Length: 231
Image (cartoon, rainbow, N blue to C red):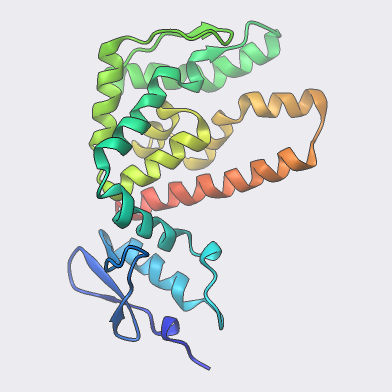
């Protein structure tokens, strides 16, 4: 038997696009109409609704969940979200290197040095690199430039950037995806240098592997959101 969500549609000829089910607007948990900034993203949301079975499973609807969060949370707390994302710049993964062994040092350099060169030039944000876990202070001018780069993203792109940063531990990696300096696959690989090294040394752990797979799926969902909200 057909359900209302099987009749999901995109309404409107220009942004923002409205998503409807059986002719009625879809609402967020906060009771706001689901209005989407690009047609590509709206089509993706509609596609998630149409493939649902007799019951709706939100776990299979990442773009729909993102739009709910964007409309109910990011839009009302934008400056706070910008601050949280920008704060990663002060402790970015790429700035904390191992002193040994030489193989790991070389892998970190191969994966991360180009990104630091890129962010220094593209974002006017040279960063200080250290070894060990002791915090290093980054230049205020660089942190200001990074925050400005974050703030340039609209609400949908900001939501994507937030998760790309959180899942990778690196604002620089997230910005590199946003600027098409890295693909999502390249970015994920760069973020996993230390983790992959640990697996090589100590072997697979079933729980850690499952967690990494979940994180990877979420990372790719965030990258997809960023792509769709710019088409």
